[in-house]
Length: 119
Length: 364
Image (cartoon, rainbow over all chains, first blue to last red; front, side, top):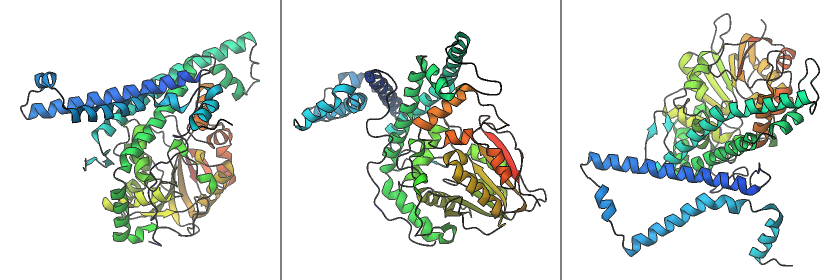
């Protein structure tokens, strides 16, 4: 090899195309947002369904019947908090598109209000 | 946790990532395979109606309706913006999900690439003073960091293109076809083969399998691509050279290669650079050598691109970060090849019939 080629840090966030306010295809940006939300929601539904399928298969292979135990399960406080945190992240994932592209005309004004820049 | 691989394809680092990305693959299939024909049929019907009603002037003989008119009329049909939203969103989801997953394994990936360079230093060629020019540093296909600016770009490209190919290239099946169908020189002498714009070396390594006696090189502008290609080849025991360089300034000797292959390279560069790459390829091929080209269709005498495909290619250019493809489509690609000195003919038909296949021979 002719040199030591790459020793820079791996950037955590990268990409102008997948970041920022993104593209808008409809006159009403909310339609774009709703379609993005629908896609993320569908992906999340499938991801969870896929995991349940894998889980049930593994348990079945181990001779464990879980259906009734799941229905009877009562979470403790720690589990409740952990699941709430995960649920909040899920909501952000599904509905984040609505915040990414706020409605055109009041978008900048709303940003100013949010950041305290009222001059 | 190491989740292993899918044959020769890396597996996402979590089941949730893999499930998410498999959803994106299924959705992409739906949007592209089932959605685009609906967009095309409805858009072209609307265009035909607009021409008949006089809203759009009928094209002169041998000409097409201006692209701006095609775009305007296509967008009158509600399926068009819906489809544009679907295609863009799935592309963003693909890259976000892929990078997020492989970033988790980033340190290990970097270590594997370093180890490959230490164990097999003679097969990777990088000039430390080389800086990719600005025209190469765009986020082609919306890939974060493009081909040049993400150290993990090779791995991200590999799994991202698994989704792009909708599962048809998991084991490099498409690249195997490209390499197998590359045209040999008439005299059968194949001692040296070059893959220009080789990205992660999928066709390059197959060329080595097909021509084990030959010295096989892949050249690409993206260092992350080259490093990943080299790691992948080294780990699989493939004796292939990878070089970071511009295809228009490759640094190889005159007449060094018997065969050259390029796959969907030319629509990713400006026409001026394309012309330079073609001249450079002519230079590095020996007399009697062959240049196998698999590429986007374009408006030369070989192809009549439909209005729907013109709309799609324009949309792809704007929304999928393909800034140079419209100029390529409008160019006289075959004429430029011939102008460089090549004798050009149709190449073997590919399974992917969207692409054109050409063989450019350097005269003896």
